Amino acid sequence: MTECLDDLASDFSVFHRIEDITVLPARTFLRLADRICAYGGATLAWVRSQKQAEAALSRRAAAMPVATAAELQQLLAPAPGVGMYGVVRQVKADG
Image (cartoon, rainbow, N blue to C red; front, side, top):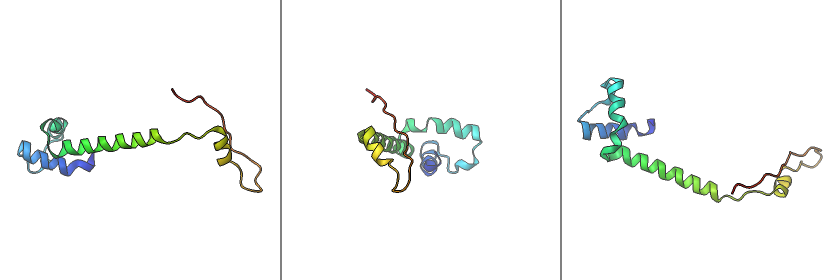
């Protein structure tokens, strides 16, 4: 959450007329910061951008192909002259 401190400071200035958030008691800061997104502003935009980035990562991860046991066996095959293989177990796919 420290990545959005500049946005939070800006929103405190606009919505609460607090120019320096570092002088607030921790309890007051947290109470006000907890609901700052309700007003819109820079912090809400930051939160939305983070959620969009997380969703994009999730979509990319879901679209990645799953390797078969044979493909994994080939990927884990030993280098020439080495006699050990990695362990490959077949598991049921989700869904």
